[in-house]
Image (cartoon, rainbow, N blue to C red; front, side, top):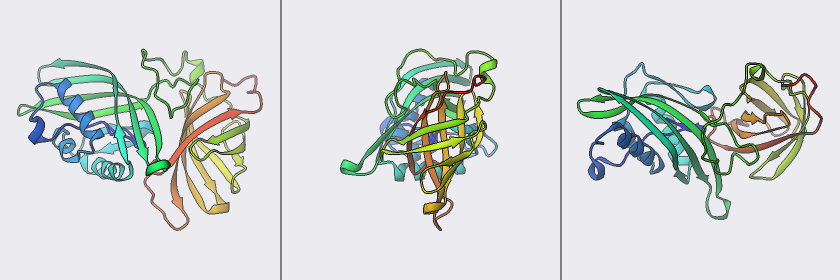
Length: 292
């Protein structure tokens, strides 16, 4: 289960690995397999990930932001890129529950996907608080991960997504059906790129579209659901574009999340969530009276 991210991101959650064959052998049960998967992900052990994941061509899995993987090759490519780009990965497990029936097992898990990018004093640390679910099957005596799904846990918006999340019980992103309606995000927003300490202002309409004061930039919102706000950005002034994903607070006055590049000048096809950082948004104008 990836990340992304890669921001991936990740982002990706990249949740799948175990120790090498020589050192660990086959896991004795599904929980052991899951924990080995997470450890292999952190240790960038792609051969073990491959061995413990089913390679059926029609298996479908999902990462944060609705990213979809079909089969093994697509996921393998993204994992290779993540292992190259991340200087170090840490994945502490906060909670893991596993159920088994015959040769099938399913699980729920909460973890903090932590990636370090850069060298020396330039190292940047980002934590993605994730929730995972998945299904394993015992094939020829070996437990293999079939399909998985991951999403952000309900963020503790008093702190940054770049800080470890609290490890208490799961919380719902929305409390009722009315809160699930797309909120009105119109108004002026103060935006901070945390790692580079860049600050600028955006003026958005109710659908989350509008300009911001950085290289003639503009935001285009593609979806807001369950307070998860997704979209793209363009900066004509320095010929760059990319995407973003933030989580709105309950009162709609702030949002926190991640951004990434998809193009820099003539360099196209940059893998989403591979290169970017974290955002902190604060609303400078009061939310409309009808905003959720």
